[in-house]
Length: 97
Image 1: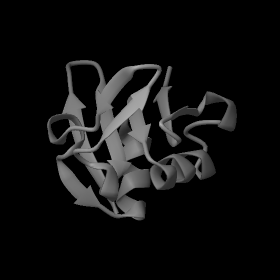
Image 2: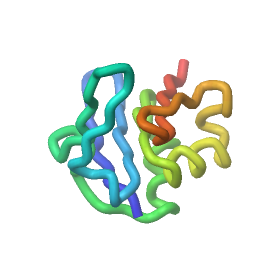
Image 3: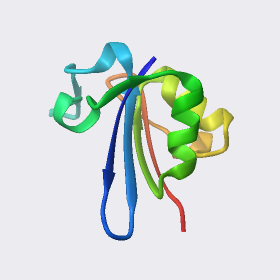
Image 4: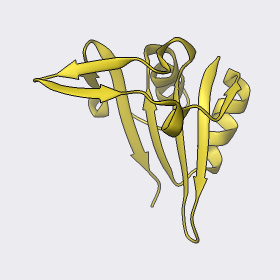
C-alpha cells in the first residue's frame, strides 16, 4: 500500500507517492533532513493498481520508497539511472512533456 496525494493546478497534475511505512519518517543525506510528511504525501492510502493509474494521469510525480519506486520503474514512469538514494531509500521524480 502507498500514501498518495494529488495536487491539481490549472495546467498540471502533481502526484506524491510514498511507501506506507515511510509516512512521517525523517531521512538524512549529507547533513540535510527530509521529512516524508503527511501534509505532502498523506492524502489517501491506495494499492498498486490505483497507484499506477494515478501515475498515468499525473504530469509530474514525486515518489519515495523501495516499493513505489520499483513499481514506477516496472511500469515505465522512471528509469534506473534517475533513482537516487536518500538514507538508503530510493527516490525519483518524473515529468511528462
